[in-house]
Length: 130
Image (cartoon, rainbow, N blue to C red; front, side):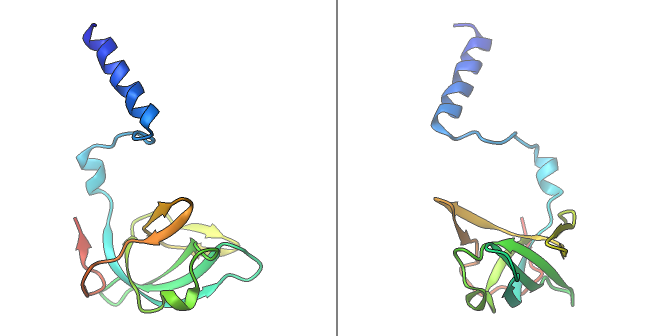
């Protein structure tokens, strides 16, 4: 088998197994992401929606961000308050139901259910993740 055919077959096998779903990024592209520990200060369901929760998250250095997340079907807002979470802070702002979201809280997807990515020990808000 030629090297090109071999590479194609390997990629097809990866796709078949569901491993490769997104484009590969370079290390330099990864370094552009500003991931930090945040602490959820407030959380409430967005009225007239099924999925949205509005949170105010301390991302360190005296900065609080409003973040809108589609987790309300699986997570209760009151259970989020005080949690340490991983936040992508340099994501372009986006509006949801007229509310601006200035970041993204990272969560694993377990059969459509969000599982928050949290540190295993107490870490100050604003701590960078690398």
